[in-house]
Every structure is written in C-alpha cells, then in structure tokens.
Length: 230
Image 1 (cartoon, one colour):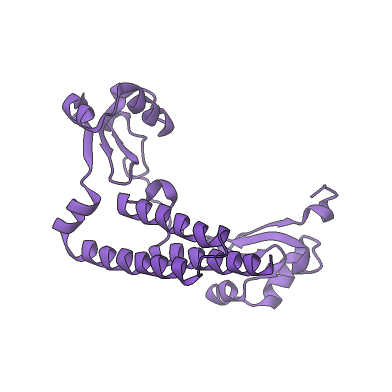
Image 2 (spheres, one colour; image 1 turned 60 degrees about the horizontal axis):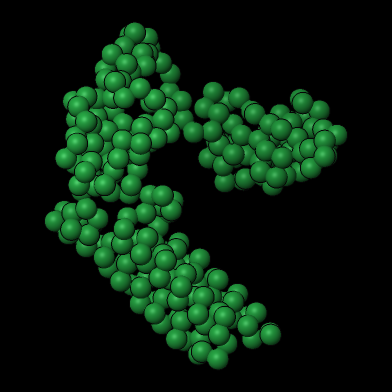
C-alpha cells in the first residue's frame, strides 16, 4: 500500500513536470501533436500507478522519451514553416469576405450548427456581421467582423488616451509580494500607510490588493473580517 502511494506521488510530480516542460497552453489550445503526447503521458503514468508489479522505470522511460520527442518536435516546428504546416496543419477560412466557404466546411466536416455555435460563443450571433471566420490549428475559431459592425474606438474618434498597463498584485491571501512592491518603487512602509487609511491594521487581513498604473490601490479584506462566511 505504501509503495503504491509513493509511486503515485512520484508519477504525479513527473506528469506535472512533463506538462510544464511542454508549455503553458490550455487544453483547448493544444496542437494535435501536443494533445496526443498529453493523452499518452497520462496513459503511461496510469499503468505503473495501478499495477505495482510493473517496474516504475517501465513508466518513467516512455514518459521521458515522449517529453524529449515533443521538445525536439517543437524546436523543429519553431524553425521550419514547412514542418509546422505538416505537423500542426494550417488555418482554414470558413467565412471569407462575408461568404461561407462551403467546400472548406465540407472538407473539415464542420456543419452550420457548429459554425453558428462558435459564432455565438464569440459574441457574434449574426453571421451577416462576419467578414472572416478562421478555424485555427488549435481548433479555436477566430472572427473578424465587418468594419461597419466593429465597435468605435478612441482612435476612430481621434480621442487621445493615456497608457494603461497591467496592475501589480501587492497582496494575495495575506501574503505581500515584495517583488512587485520593488517593481513599483515602493516598500512595505508605504503599503502599511495606505492600508491604514482604510482602517486595515496589517497586510495579513487583506485577501487581495493591487496597484494600477495610475497609482490607485484596490483592496479587499478577508471574508472573516467582513463578517461573511468563507
């Protein structure tokens, strides 16, 4: 029983490491080769995890082989457009210049219900508003609406805008992020002073706090301090 426990923990860590090495794509954004490797790794890990009579190395070696193969394949596709087209395929245009590409949809076995569903998911329920719809190699549908249907931007109205960057997380679940404080050229004393303005005694009482590019501090205290059930 103890052996099975430790084998499971070891293989769990190994699979997590393998997926981290493969990259940060979400499941829905995996290329076909990456999806195959992910499935195979999970299967290979499950066999020695369940059957303790099988040597652990019989599961580790194939997993390491797949990781190496995937890294090499990724490097090849990074350097070669031709290899990338062969391994990952090319995007398919389902709607071009406002016209549905029937032959391409038939080739991909992509019916109208599938297309309309994807358009609704992408907040474009009216197919008449679409100029281009491109099925990416990851299976995601990219939509470009007709210019007259696109939202008006500040650039269209010639309105000057200021720079808006990513907010910096300063506190997460009571833990202060000193790296982000340093990046903002601030320190804990400044943070404590700002929190004191809101009647907060210490950072440990804060569930989340962030600083935007205008220097505004957003914060939320922990639920127990707000009298809420966690």
